[in-house]
Length: 214
Image 1 (cartoon, helix red, strand yellow):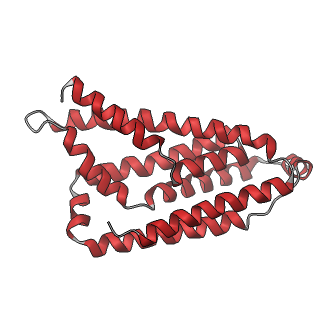
Image 2 (cartoon, rainbow, N blue to C red):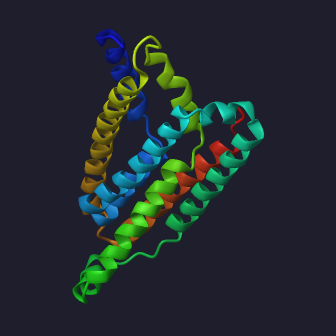
């Protein structure tokens, strides 16, 4: 893999990663609600899922999904169902004024923080893994940048590292944007509107995924 090929991969990954999607929306929402530390946990959950899916695709399972469309359709519908569930949960999420939140946090946040972080990580993992097209994308995208005449593992490692750096960089861009929104979410009425907006977007993503045919 030459330097020019790597730069092409960088540019294409930069554009693809910048595109708003469920991962970016989830990280921005978590940052707005719970702060940057929680957003970092969400980033870890998303990246764990994406790296796992890309590794699976490198093992040839992406081609398996292309060969058996029924398996892909089942995964697609399961992913759509989870995004719809997350959207409804977001929509119905209880809201509190900032004073109420401060009073609640004053009563020993020790174990609750751990539970919250584990929940955020699990939800982020499922959001990222809920779209099986990521496997097909990795299976079709990565091989184009690998020189078959050279050792494949080092090339795959370079591409995977590059993808991780670019993807995480965009995660932080969206997380910072969410953090800036947090100052506007101190009132319960604003938070309720934010919950319904993000919930509606998640449901929209679910509808798009459920009706996708390509």
